[in-house]
Length: 232
Image 1 (cartoon, rainbow, N blue to C red):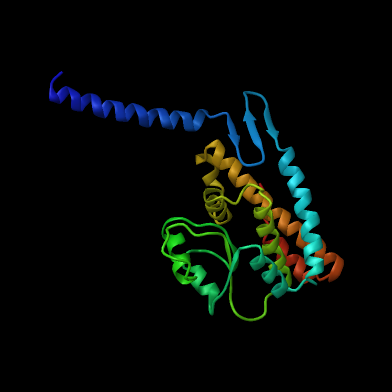
Image 2 (spheres, rainbow, N blue to C red):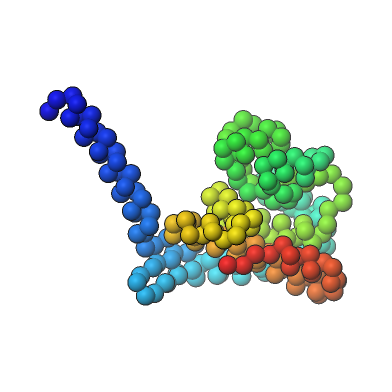
């Protein structure tokens, strides 16, 4: 085999590998995360998620107890978060700083690439391209219901519920600002990850709505939280 033939075969092999990856992406019939598994067939979709459901119940019960013990006080919740090893950062103009990478105040999940590097720099967390989950808030008064919503999601992550990995959260944020066209291009893992991310956000929203009804009965607060939810 001459040199020219070797080069041709080399590029043909690369093309075959690329095509195989694309095919596998669309033909995959199962997806697994830390606490559940989804299996597809021609007529049935089966989800094995007993561990996820068990952890959801624990999160609900534990957050109820923690919020009660902290007297719905945002600063006490932040102290609890710090005591469990999660970094809490207070920054002047935190909202503007975070808007640069299209993040919001509160619980910021792990980020990668330029976004992760940016967060690490502004929070003085080193020079890595991957950031750890942390809370980033501005100085001043914190809305208690917003804080509880963020706390609920953080605690869900600590309890091992899925939907908080970098890719699932990235797709979730795109989904919130899209017309739904994104969904047609997702593979099974990405679709399941998006669904889990939406579930976690909705669970946090439902918790705060229930708390607001019981303690405040504030229509303004309830409408505010409803506007922030997401469904799939």
